Amino acid sequence: MLITGNSKEVSRQVDFIKSSGKTVGFVPTMGALHRGHISLVEQCNKECDYTVVSVFVNPTQFNDKEDYKRYPRVPEEDSKMLKEAGCDLVFMPTEQEIYPEPDTSIFDFTPLDKVMEGAFRPGHFNGVAQIVSRLFDIVKPDKAFFGLKDFQQLAIIRRLVQQVNRPVTIVDCNIIREADGLAMSSRNMLLNADQREAAPTIYRVLMQAKELVTELNPDQLKAYVTDQINVNSELKIEYAEVVDAGNLQPIKAWNDAQSVQLCVAVQVGKIRLIDNINLI
Image (cartoon, rainbow, N blue to C red; front, side, top):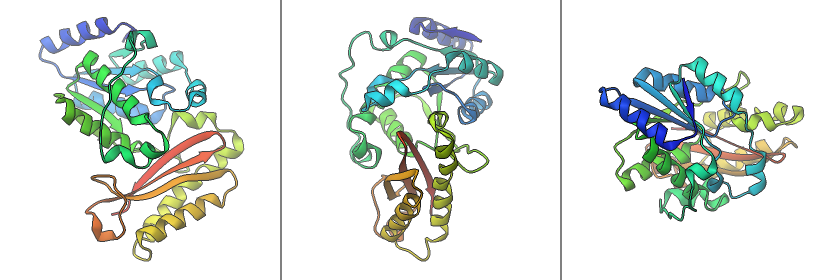
């Protein structure tokens, strides 16, 4: 497994691999890897001849500087996990390598970026688009793999690929959960014992909500989810939205969309967790 922080070396290696007719898959991450990330790598290994994984905590997608500072960074552990998972190339760049000059690119993903994460984290998706487009420039993958836990981000990246006309197939991969239902996240390691015990409530409530679709309308279901999560003193819901899975816009009736997603963001102390579930 090759480990490098040099973007030109990555491009040279990828060009060499592609010159022999092999396909290149890409898994972008911010490190602090867990089994969810590794499932993406495994899927990439299945579908592509050569697997590239990036590990970079991207500053431009954090609207909270303190959140950026406390985001976990464990590069040695990440490297070990990726080697065991069969990764071929790990790209671990510095901020200077990715952004030798400030990135002033502005993207418009209306209406996808105006709701949920876009409303609560101004500038977040513009930062995501900056780093993903930059990484796609360097790696030039045939396929890129993203987890469905970041449901809105996945929709944004699909739109980005359309807007900049990238020849890359975006592959969505299932949410990987702990035994108690908590969606795997690098942020989970920042939870204290009480917070970690409370966090699975999020998924339990989502599952309860799925069972209530025939009894409640979308607004009532949102209120139910909010109330049930906030009952736990360790948890404070930031938003609960019932949206059209295609355009991410809130719906008022179940027949407003062919596929419906319930998305939540929850503050657990200072740590912010997101999750989602398909309702219809």
